[in-house]
Image (cartoon, rainbow, N blue to C red; front, top):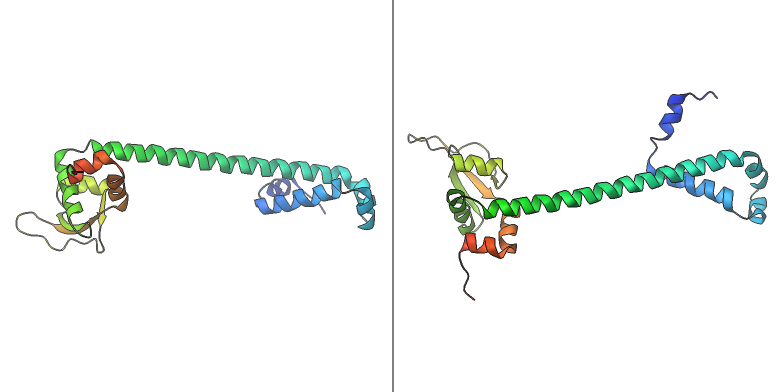
Length: 180
């Protein structure tokens, strides 16, 4: 059997569960006591090919540790990015201009947080582009009227409602001061 460099590199593309199996199997062969290895007829095999088994063990353990470190770093980065995004979203909602605030208040007054808005309105376009509101159902305007109205049904994103309900300053801004 002839093995080239490309085949060797393909070994590193194996999924983590294969590396786990290789690490456990080669580790058992290497570290099992001689008495047990002799009963399993592995003593001669371990003595003859121990250096290959050791290389497999070291490489598979190293790759597993590397994979775990990479996954942990990705998870931590994702958590950091989500916290950063949440903070930016809250700051954006706190600093909204009165026109956009008025539109969000109108959405909040609706029972299902859905209403018809003018698609050609700049405020609507900005809130759509920032994913604060989204199209509800059909994305085709319901009609074009003589006064340049293009009504379309939109809903307020759940994350916006959640952030408003969780932050007292946002509650005061969008629902008004709540008397205790």
